Amino acid sequence: MLATASPSSSPCPAALASASQSSPAVVDALLVSADLASTAHLLALFGVGALLLRGAGCTVNDLWDREIDKKVTRTASRPLARGAVSPAEAAAFLAAQLAAGAAVLSQLNPASVVVGVAALPLVALYPLAKRVTDWPQVRSRRGKRRQREGERVFEEQESKRARLNDDEKTFFSLFSLY
Image 1 (tube, rainbow, N blue to C red):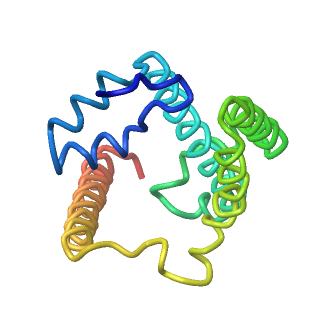
Image 2 (image 1 turned 180 degrees about the horizontal axis):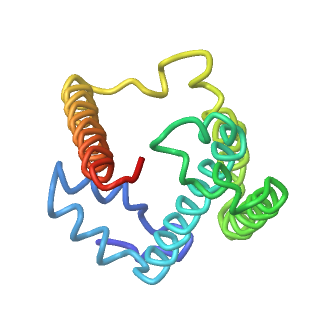
């Protein structure tokens, strides 16, 4: 006979996914005994926390790469690179993201808080890693093939734009007064 689970002992989504592969009956038993509201609450916390931490990582990356981003066509339109946002404003936004993330983290159990705090240096250092290694950029063969294809398409588009600009110059030069 199954005992009902307390809100603190509801199964995590990873356990449900793992159990579903081995035995659908196990999943049924877990769902019956789980406090679904508690599980949904945890899923929401993890989702919001992941979104905030991912955003914080992007903000750190944009802060550290703003001078490089100005020189790269693909990244030149980012708010910091184009000057729409100052570094101080970006740092304030980063602080807000981290504060909101801390609020989410504070609602989890102590072990989760330790793991969350331990992950912060990785989030901060990941953007710097691309300066010393290509590991952050490692992709599968399929991913590399897609990247090369994307670069080829981009180069073709740039070439077409350049030809159009040359054609426009030629056309307008016919009407210019010398």
